[in-house]
Length: 216
Ligand code: SAM
Image (cartoon, rainbow, N blue to C red; front, side, top):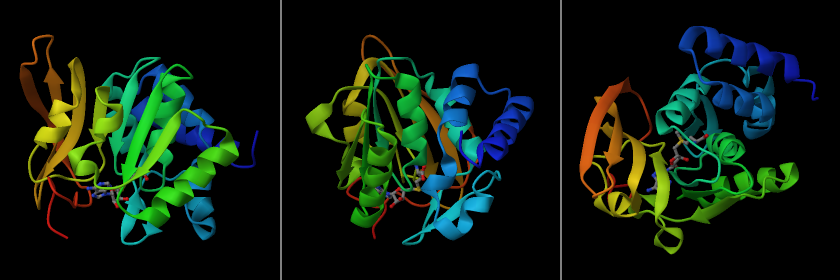
C-alpha cells in the first residue's frame, strides 16, 4: 500500500456514491496509483476529481470521466482495446487492469514525450499488457486491429471512418465529437457491421489533431 492509498480510496468511494460506477471499474481505480501519472508537484491533487495539466498543453482527464468512459465501454476480461490519446497514461492503465493479462490495451499518442513518460510508468509498475504507440491515432492502429473496444480521449470533428473500420462486429466505441459544443457518443457495431450511435451527453475534451481530426 502506498502513502496515497487513503486518498485514492476516498476518491473511489465518492465515485461509487455519486455515479454508481461498477465494481470492476472501482476495483481498477483503487489499484492504479494515479499520483504517479501527474507531474510530481501536483501529486497532492491527484485524487481530486478534476483534470490536471500534464505539459505540452494537454491534461489528464478527471477521474469521473475515466470511470464513466470505462463503464460505457462495458469492458470485459480478455478484450483488445484501442485508446486514442495516451496523455498521462492513466486511463489506459485503468483499462488494462480490467481487461487483465489475457487482454491488451493499445494506446496511441501523437506527442512522443508523453508516450515515453507513460511507457516508463507502465514498466515501473510491471503493467505489461499495454502497448504504447507514437503516431496519429485518428487513423487508428491497423497493425493490431480489429479491436473489441475503441475509445478516444480527445474530441473529433466527426467519427473517424478508419477507427470504425478497425472495430470488430459486435464492438463498441466511445468518442467525444464536436468543437465548442462536444458530445460523448457511444457507437455500437452489430454482428452484421451495422452502426448505431447515441449521445451520452455534453463533455469537454482537448481537440483530436490529425488526418481524421482537426488541423494542428
Ligand atoms: N487518456 C489520457 C489520460 O489518462 O491522461 C487523457 C488524454 S488528453 C485529454 C488527450 C490526449 O490526446 C493528449 O495527450 C493529446 O496529445 C492526444 N491526441 C490528440 N490528438 C491525437 C491523435 N490524433 N493521435 C494520438 N493522440 C492524440
